[in-house]
Image: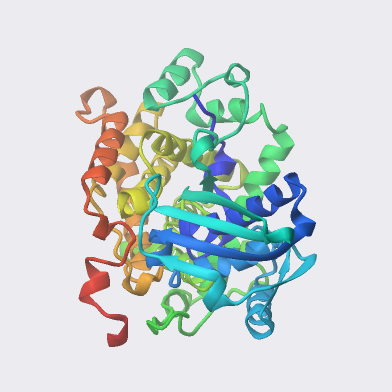
Length: 476
């Protein structure tokens, strides 16, 4: 039984895709680490990258080619200044030279040294191989798999996707929702409290708090940037940003001024609250995040980049609409529950659209948000799992068919749908006696995985079916 931390499920990184951008970026970093471990870094004469399956079919639209370059350049997606991304890429393109790990100038040509293969490697749909040519005509190659949510594995260590820790050190090991509910019942604790006890194995209380607030502040800043940025998204679809106009209309009657995201949050609390405005605000928050994501901005993978807008939108709904007194305590409680629900989905099914379609991204994020909101609203642990089940049940079978391989259409709007469903699911769960539930969370997770296995590969992030075929990028 593995332990997957909240911070594994909620990673800070760069858009537009956790599987196709963040994962390959991390794989490149791991490849550099291998070169050093093998004591062959100084012998490298050149490097090349082969992309397979979904990483190839939608790689350009997901910036996979850029991600591997940025990773090989020694940058980290969590900390790189966003403005440096275009500078590094342009330098490589113009000089035909890669500064490997930021230390070693190495010849590199985009068209020649990044190869897109339509074939799939047998282990996983998202495979990539790095090859380094060394002195004396020696070659070192290593293959990685991006399995969703920024997780990267090799075929021989696929089980090591969470924290490497002796299971006995974790006070409450959790494989499924039944385990989780057994712990909450025996210990008379909320789900967030169980999560806290497990996280203490790895971090102090102060570190847990600080890291959770860093996650939230990244989400908040992302919404703030998205709501204050006008224009068209990159990539060729000419998609106009909508969060800017929606935010402007929603704030039209407000005279408040603000100089940072937290003051902005407070200003929103003072706006008119009607049902239509609530729908618009939640949609605005989700749109804002995913427009930033589509622009290679910094977001929180929750549990993926393509679904990064659902959780912040629902938490922002709680803070700006439902509870104006909500603060750090509630924010951290929400993120803990969301992370735990996401980890159960990852263990029991998948969070990779290349493996399970969009039900694995928007569906899981909606379930995470629904459960987290339910606990904040006073739901029991059983009702929290009911909320997560309801949210996922109504995303079962959702396909992944991005036009042009870009995380824009239908991805951005789907975050608004997932957020609204999450809120509805939480409210339904609060009115439900868990004893009367016919479909427990573990059953819907099992069903989701079976649905993923039965789904045609055309609808698993390949851009070979659905909207991706019906609407040609040239028509846009």
